[in-house]
Amino acid sequence: MAVSLYTVYSTVGVQRFLYGSRALAKIKWWEGTIVYQIYPRSFQDSDGDGVGDIAGITSRLDYIKELGVEAVWLSPIYESPMVDFGYDVADFTEIDTLFGTMDDFNELIEQAHKRDMKVLMDFIPNHTSDKHVWFELSRKAKRGANNPYKDYYIWHDGRKAKDGTLLPPNNWVGVFGGSMWTYDETRKQFYLHQFTKEQPDLNFRNPEVRREIEEVIAFWLKKGVDGFRVDAVRHIFETKELHRFEKPSGDKQFTPDQYEFYSHTLTRNLPEVHELISTWRDILNAYEYKMDKDLFMVVEVFEEEGTDEQMKYYASGAHMPFNFQLQKMNTTCDGSCVARLVYHWLNKMPEDSVANWVLGSHDVPRIADKMGVNMVNTMNMLLLLLPGVPFTYYGEEIGMQGVKVAFEDTQDPFGINMGQDRYEQFSRDPCRSPMQWSYAANAGFSNAPKTWLPVHSNYKENNVEVQQRDPQSHLNFYRRLAKLRRDIAFIRGDLDYAIVNHEVFSFIRFENGNIAYLIAANVGETEVVENFRKYEGKFPPGRGFVPQKGFVVMDTHAGNGSYVIENDFIQLSKVKLIPGQGLVLRFWPTF
Ligand code: NOJ
Ligand code: MG
Image (cartoon, rainbow, N blue to C red; front, top):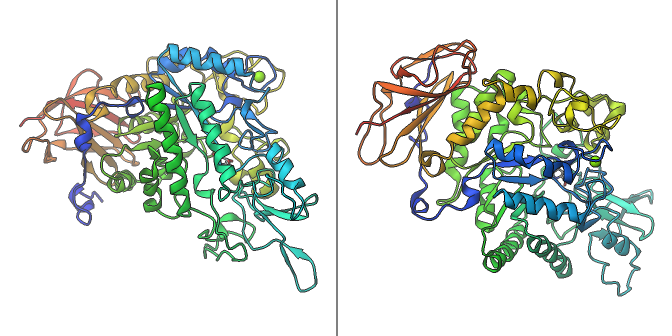
């Protein structure tokens, strides 16, 4: 059944998204860029140990630049025992030897800046590794002793069961499953960890901890980094009342050892975090002034408490919290469903703030696996042409697929913790497989006999080299999208929804009085013919409308069953879209 745009919006009203007064202001680099996420272990190995490294990244900067990307975000490269592959940091101001040296890092920054590219660091304030010297000192702190590290972490005596056995202070379960508390034999107390037991949570109620972390921020800013992706911010504070129990969430698909079994009102998104983030923003502001450049901070906040909770992070000082709405897409999500995901974020965002979109990351399955290879171009089209900052996870530009890893070979602690029967549902290894560069051994990623995770067996058909040669490849489609999005209509233009129905999600991007773009995607399973002239435009000034003909700028399915021809005009009253297809059409709105 086709639902008209106006039926879909009857309850919420037709929504528009305007950049408002900011359109007049200077656009900062981070508002116009694409951010490319690199998982350093898997991007490019330069020294043949089977693990990617910093020099490898530097050697690929030209490739990234040619994608049309101006900023990279590096998943952690700090010194780490690698229990959670770098998200367990043993020293916040050292580079892990696996990834290279500080000189390699300086060189990366220099080479990136030379190319007018920015480097964002992953920043992990919630926890350290249990091998961090702060934790080593904290666990040695004797009761009553005046040890400055005593309260760097969250410690508790625990409680006694009726039979006298010692139990953790409460029922809190960590993100990767199992108790949030581990007993430490040295200190003879429990310590809190929201993630693995090798990732003890720092105590941000301790001013000394706050000062240490502030110094870490300043350290990297002085080194010239252009901003941060801040990890797990919603987990930073827990209630002070450690005797309190968390209530079950009521979600029956989870078992009591799983995180989702509980609601997390005592351990997630506590109001204190916003004040903390505002102080980090102050540091950024100070360095913006000192170094005369714009800096950027995006914070990672998942959504269980609802988008309103996420939106608070815009106000607290982050330039943006990640928007994971598009990650909710799956093959059953129809046109109206996509529209809901999109306007859900745009409508809630505070005025004058900037949106962002994420399809994939090192934590979730790859988009090609989730939506099908047929949808890769269309997904990248939405990602790059919706208003705001797109985040592209390495390999998504070539439609990489996740790799299958046996339980014995599983590396991810989340997968391992869940055991052989459930690991495939939770392991994040599949989306972390090595970048597929070429036909060469190990897809050109490494010349080691064995890589840390297996290279996908399809690498000979799917790699950068093969896609570079094919004008219709995902890679070349991505590059063209990146180029197109530099048009003012995308960088600071308005958005209005066009036809939204069971099959189609479409929207228009336009900048006052300029050329407009119609982006139309068939996310359904049947071929459709749509009349876009029915759209009653809301182009300012006054009421514009869609003309007879539109110019086909891009077609996700060019040469692949499509009815249209790129660089040709088509009748906007009869636009045929096959399943999975996306079109970018250009026209001059008639006023
Ligand atoms: C979020 C990161 O994206 C994830 O990979 C990591 O395991 C946790 N935070 C803990 O740092
Ligand atoms: Mg290496």
